Length: 190
Image (cartoon, rainbow, N blue to C red):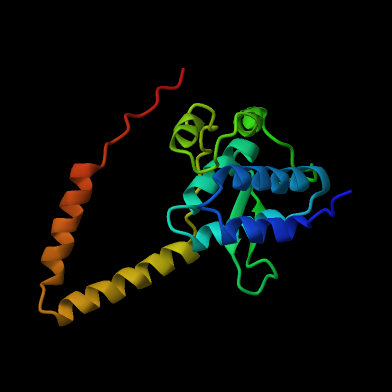
């Protein structure tokens, strides 16, 4: 019986030679995703994503595959203090476990067909199964307004130091905002 290589070692090995075998990379990514879905073990998938971030043009491809697997439920953040170099956070509230989305079968079919995870045709076809992005909820509170005002004040002060007339710059900016903002008609209530 062949010795089974730990998943974390498989992740590191795939990234050491990922350009040589993208199909093997997709298989390892699939194992990482399934480990998370079945047992809640985030580490191997986190390590895979961290290594993707370190590679050119790779992180966005891996993120697209993760969106097919989980929708917008997961958010990833690099974290040098974490053992894997990054961490996931759940993008929703509740105690339910991580469940694979219905479109994940698309990825398992790609593995069966021998496709590589970075194959252009495969990545292009992901667009057909990607879930629509959930609209972000933006909370504008006094703290957020103050932070933006402070940032704008610093920027305007730097313009003034450079010799610009801040009043003219603001007037031009306000005109540009007005030109590019579409006013919503009032809703009619029955």
